[in-house]
Amino acid sequence: MIAWNPSLSIGIQEIDEQHQAIVGLINELEANKDSQDPTVAIDALRFLREYLHGHFDLECELMLDICYPDLESHKQQHELFINHVIFFEIENEFGVVTSVMLSDILAFLNDWFVSHIATEDRKLGAFVRTRAMTK
Image 1 (cartoon, rainbow, N blue to C red):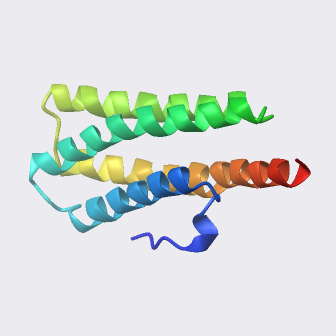
Image 2: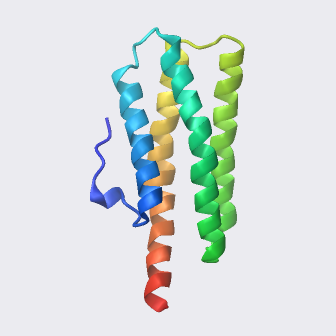
């Protein structure tokens, strides 16, 4: 389980709220990781599909607006996330929704949280704050 705390905030309310929603999903999947109910994974995939459109679009728009120097690298990481979600959706289409798939989604999201949200997005937040102070 991940406990949201202020150190995880990047300082942009809408993005922080979206990150908190991912933390909520991770915690929900952790609580249901032994579930044999396929709707748990299906609901997670639906959430991720909606999340990646709204959240990534918002982050990209922000990065363009502030001329973020790591824009391309950040966007590549988003593309990797999208590819993972597509892979999970393909598994779902072929009926491979099992507790193993749920475990795979959970492992992916935990890794994403550590490697991207808690690291890369915090760098973005620091850059935003630096830009705000220089204006």
